[in-house]
Image 1 (tube, rainbow, N blue to C red):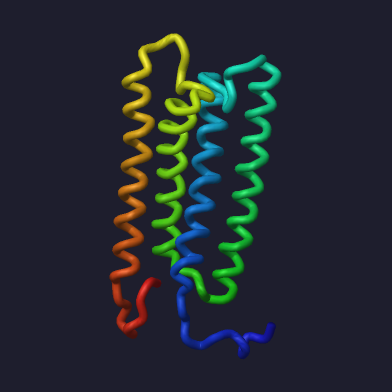
Image 2 (image 1 turned 120 degrees about the horizontal axis):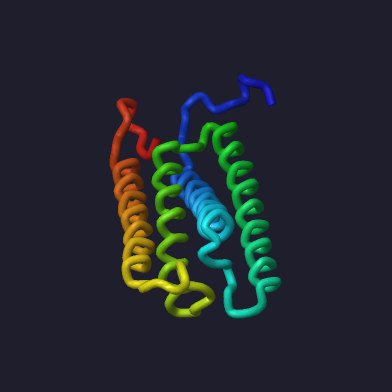
Length: 162
């Protein structure tokens, strides 16, 4: 593509910029959970209600899914950037929404509703659950604030959502 064929006026794709950030945020938070809590601390596996082999397999499947989502998200991010349709503010807001959403979903649905695993075993869970879910809620609220700020902020040329 020739440089002259690129659009001269930058128009951000609000929806895609936010969604690409959400995908990358989910993948990064899943990776942090997998690396820190599954591997380094060995507190739990993705699925702890079976044999150690099944638990290890479930961790591998989670890891494969997070890598696929991360690679796909970064290809989408690069495409938006190449087309000059990326709003970095909205992408950061989406990132926080995705990371917080993953954390809250994991804490509420995986830990409490489906009981796939707990944060840690052999300890009183309430403080762990509160910190786990509250940290996700803080990330979610920060994401909402950044997306709201980015959508409401008007650059000097009158366009929105950069």
